Image (cartoon, rainbow, N blue to C red; front, top):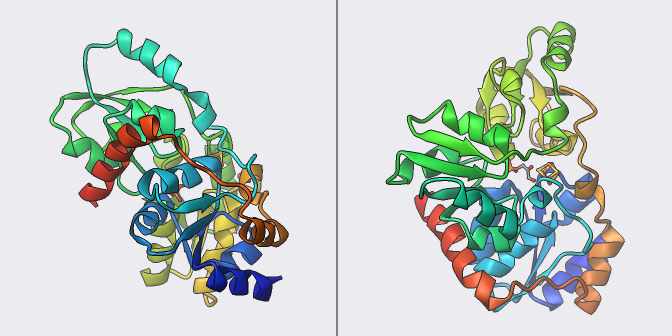
Length: 297
Ligand code: 13P
Ligand code: SF4
């Protein structure tokens, strides 16, 4: 199956992008694995004719926003992000009517239609830079309240937040981390900013998924407790075979990130099924929000 996929990708000039949470066999056949920011940058710059996205719906939409002339494939159409579904354009429009005028910073884990109504996007890797780049004292951040609280702790701006969250990162509790630390007292605790404030306050370091991979590679420490989706354990261990990685909790598992199989990838490439195309009236304003974020770096 892996040979078939690589052959199809060559023949069709397709690039396969995978999020760091995807199953090991999917990460192994991808041209690039990364966090949301890296994958967005790659989707904007590739000269492939087809972008096949192993991730969830909003990621494939972002690729379509950035590369409207390319065919974008999501091998499982029902792979979604529950956090992205906690906001929609009508709800955002209604919320904005209750606030004084201010920029809207929207996490990329959102639909294209919500991005289109936003001032700028952010990812977990650049949220503080994005918020600080804005010429405003107050901002509304959507849809992740935990990411908003993290940003609030690292900026002087007043942050209004949407009441959404990643249901999996939001499950992690300080007691889980305490238990993991008792079992692995020498380990560094790395947390993702989608976790609750009580977790971020006890973290040794707060990073995006690729930030965690980079940190583990360069750090002198030998063992790490991982406060993000358990799929990240695979690339961490693969890139650092001499170091030890422990999940903060096995409850931190996103079923939508595990839906795509090798057979789905092969079928999608072969028959061009699972195409994602953002309509132009949404894509053009959404493009501005995503492109302005990428320009900040
Ligand atoms: P990053 O990989 O950008 O850190 O995001 C985590 C996530 O939840 C993606 O859905
Ligand atoms: Fe969405 Fe959370 Fe799954 Fe990421 S891990 S795709 S934020 S539900």
